Length: 251
Image (tube, rainbow, N blue to C red; front, top):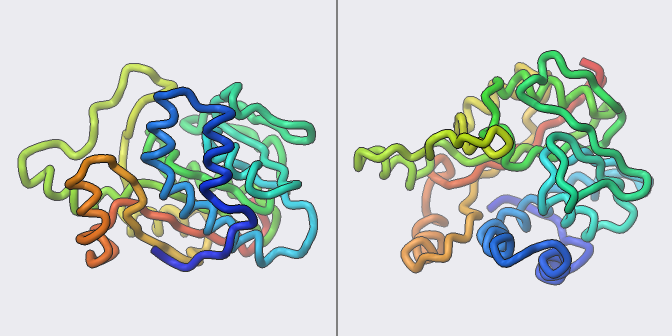
């Protein structure tokens, strides 16, 4: 599933703490499903933080959700600002800010604060009808020079999606009526994301494809355990891409 770094606290301990504090029964089911993805995401964050000097680090988490709470709980002293639609469960702590921005309006949106060392965009771009290159170019402006953006999104051409299409079924759910929870407008391939990132002024530092969604069904569990590790990367469920902003974050 790609290289990682040791986490400062055991993941299961932090997940249990966050679930106990913030989750109801429905949300606990969501957390179980996404737990392997969150673990993988935090491992990539650990790589980025591990190569930075021992100094205050400010992170921008796009689309506040449970990863926001996990980031705050995992790293003491990490300042985690958020951007997108607000959620009272993940409200800013002292010294943190929330920027209310509709990313579908990214082309015209203002940058509220520059200088973040890391931007996390986890399972967001597929929910937007605005081009990924436009969104990434906007978010790049929040970064300090030399900063990093971690992008996580489903793989549009994963094997289960290909099989559904062969069976005559649409692999993507219909767009929902609630514009604050619209479902997926477009899922991306690795090639599409690489082109979007390059167009937005990033350098693709690394790309990992992995099956990190923990569907509770027996068939899916066996698929994840036995079939998925043997698949070519292009057929796996999730894409995690680490993007470097090598120049100024003002582009």
